[in-house]
Image (cartoon, rainbow, N blue to C red; front, top):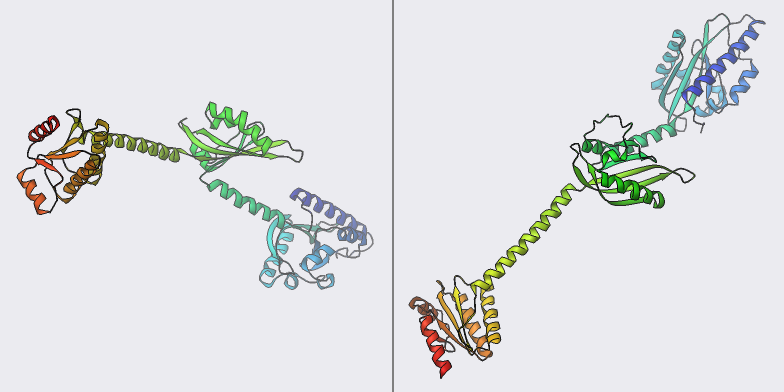
Length: 424
């Protein structure tokens, strides 16, 4: 592969070649009056043949008069099959007319031309090349041909394409990506970063520093912790904050990468920052929800305690008034509170008053029966009070066996029974 050259270097070489050709032509003109190109000039051919850059020159009709070995190798042809031929014999059929007419126009305009094109080599490989062409003049100043050189730009072009693809990715990623030199001067900021800071997409970053994108406390972390750590270990990560267009702090999660030169000296740092505002908002909402749930649960517990109070009326008698609906959770609470109270107060008799229970179904009746049986296991008698006629009818209708339970129609009657039994 030919070495990479700049346009300036290529132009300078063409100038030197034209000067050399003109000098040789002037010497030949002293001996012969022929307008032909100096094909017998061995010196210039040796010079051009030594170049790794493909070089050729044509006559005024567009015929190849001579080419160096590099040009023949580039076309994948023997030099003898090129000399004396035109672009129609050498170039691909669909491009031959374009190449031929372009060369004729160049000589007619007496112009120097540098342009890039994609060509297909003899091996079928697609290459990006740069053509540099210039007219050749005889001693009288008449154009007698042109000289051209080809520079292979494939690797540079592919590198440029890769760079362009990388830049497209960096520019369109939703994360903020910025780069600064070792002095903290910002040299690059992608679209996301510019939008967040309120900068135009084409705003000049000259003079801006890392501190311009962070609140003071975050900039302090960047300078004193993030950059030294990245310089030492290659990277740093942590949670800091950026400033938006209104100067408000935006929480971000940042990764900082360090870039060193061949001697290990820090040259640039790259920061990749992700806006954590939404995540923080969700976390706060979850924390608030969790706290709210804890409060609600505490309220429920308090309500359960209030809805199933256990009242001692003597040293061995407790009363539990039940009010409202009874579901499975409350039934379990009734049993737990009753048994705990019997054990705590060493009660021998417990009164369950259901005056405040408006609906008596199988679930409520079963819960009361289970509570009574559990109390009997602890040695306590259960008295069920507040049984109204309609509830008594329901108990009989659903077949609840209450032979282990003493029943009274009112709480007053139940307390009187309990006191008499206690005195007896």
